[in-house]
Image (tube, rainbow, N blue to C red):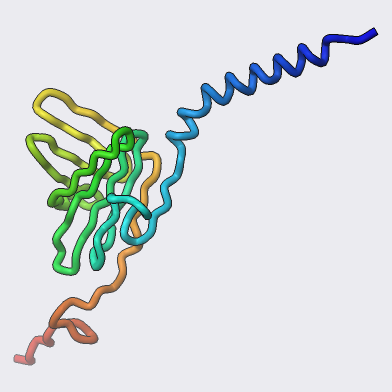
Length: 157
């Protein structure tokens, strides 16, 4: 006598695995990590041009963003939508510690370690951050500086 139970179990298991793969694939895509270094996202347009470095970079479910700074202290917002790879590169500015602001064509972009907020006159979209990086601040010698700093001692009176 041959039992059909193993065939039914295999078919049921295959259906469960197929269903799990269908349900999990968007979650896996949303949790995908993008490799980064001191200039932002590797192999991406959301990467600071040398000699710039990234002061912050983040990934949400819908976007990746890098905030770049050059040696003169000029900031740049580099962002991309993950759905269609649309890229935006504009001037940025720090507003408060850990927050950066950029704008283009009536839309504003505010980046923090917790979220990316995109605003227009008609809508606001808040994207929670899934991946965030801020390289440790390196000591950079500024032009005209010297060991011990540029503070002159106060002459005695």
